[in-house]
Image (tube, rainbow, N blue to C red; front, side, top):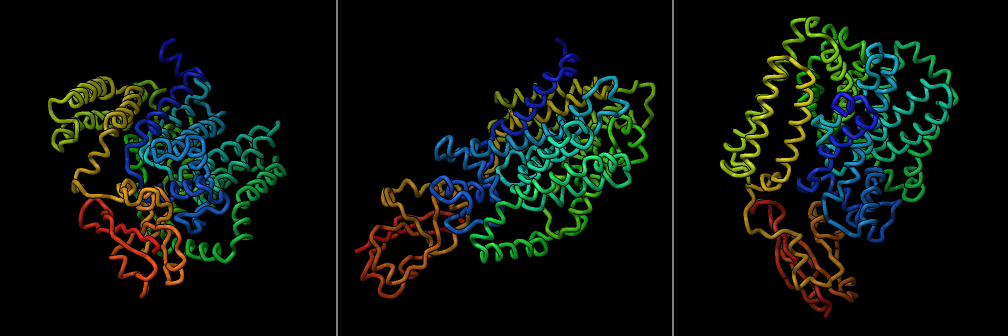
Length: 558
């Protein structure tokens, strides 16, 4: 079976997508250090597995109600299956699986949106397949899918909900089954990040799909009752946990809700134009993404393969809605990646399906420019490795030689076939290959590069767990609020402790105490009558001495 046959067969397409997802989301998954958001998720999951409540999560012994629990349940389930683990590669598997589902759901969604497109008659399903590959290799999707936090779950499940909504509306026979499934997935998306995916993904899509689209409105009206049932299912599933929390811990839930709502306007505030460079977050597809946004150029080329106006409206509506919220972060742009991947694919399909002699000058310039930029990246990478002194890639090393051969060969191939002959399929394949090669070669050395400026020999909180003086001591406490990354490194909950003379007098077992100053100065007057305290070691909070140092003490009852 040749490459052309593989790209036309359903199994060949599925295996290709799974292969790209495997490299994008799973390969070297343990490489980066744990992030802040991951620390919060992993600590809460660890406490669930250690005997805490799965319905009322805690983080460092305190209620954790700021985020819905589904992503935490997924990580806790991994720990239930594997046993207590701090292997970041394993703990990131749920996020990687969610990213893979995002790509597969998007594949299904685009199949429904392009089923009747004129350009699909010759090669049915190719547009959806290419769209999935573009999304799976887009920079923001790759980075988010490799990190165990909330956004990838919420967006993945919502795209699945969109797929089943469109499937149910466009297939009247047994459409209620798809719509019921859509309600379930949308509800699970709400359980992943509350109303955020409704605002950032569902609302823009519905605006694009229904406004000025009378044929779509007729389809929805025909499935009115089933759509209403889907909405009820979504609200019941998505609202189940918030209602339970409200019934159980209403005062705390109300306080958290007020803090979270206020944070949208006073935390991580950025100007309204902060997301202007969103197209660059497709990574190596950025030039095509920018061209696909130029409606006079792109629409008449792409609309025979994709619903261009729907995709562009979906993207613009999402961009406007996200920009109106004062709180902004790069990963919040994730809802923009699916419609952008669809727009990119519309141009790719035009270029690959249209004979060269029918191209206009902009088409030739774009394909060659894209190929030239990609070839330049391939040439620049080994040079950057040598100049920056990338660990393990010194000039003359085996890794450096392999990188020179690999990226040099790609540069020659792309320059000849993609630039000189202007073959878009070659540039597309080259983009996927370069992205995969970067992840395969560079991710293993990322932790070393990340720690290149670390002060050597510093002790950290994870080192304290091996001290003989704390071995066997079950209770760890902190006299100050300990950063959640430090809590993760401690390997257990380290709740804040406010000791009184009565509590010290009643102490039966030793306690390990972490503090930013000498423990004796923090205990109430007269403490020495009831307990004995001694400093056993200290640790630094970050990579350098300037990060600050905390003390580790042991308090024993007398």
